[in-house]
Length: 214
Ligand code: DQA
View 1: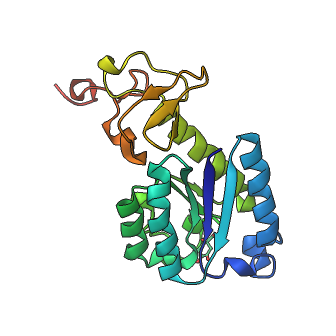
View 2 (view 1 turned 30 degrees about the vertical axis):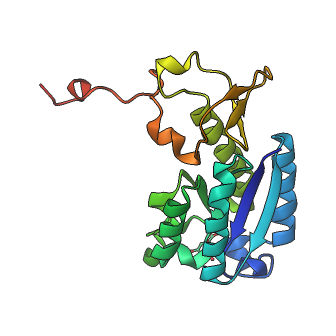
């Protein structure tokens, strides 16, 4: 069973009492419960953490990289708190770990002060969930799950055969499928989507198809 990591940055330990008009009245313990409920529906385990320290979050992201590459971890949902707007180091850590990350904000940061509109994390994130309150956490888990699984379902070349539905990686470079037909593969990393062929239905139009081009 794979795990989804849920990381929370500075001041999120104060959820429930911190500016409830912005962040609501649910506590971080309530949020953790919601994450477990959603992950359970998807057959995932949750590793839920919070730290007020940038270096601690970076250490956790660095440790998550190999776990993800080994197939034990799906990726991470990350609410970086105010570090969103300041931390190039978090951005670099996500890239270095090659970790699929969904960035999450409880509040709609774009409808708040100007300084909250820029995120250092977004360019390194697989997706972003913003402004749905704490209900964004289960949405982010679901989104991460769908994004990672659909990337895994499309092989890199025709020589790798017909796409199989939702293959799961396991440690040791084997891939198992719902049909329990094991295949030996070279060890893969979570960034395989970078090398994946785009599915014809999702591929962007060819340059000549773009409006305004001759
Ligand atoms: C936040 C938004 C950040 O701007 C803020 O510093 C937080 C929480 C959110 O979840 O809405 O601490 O990440």
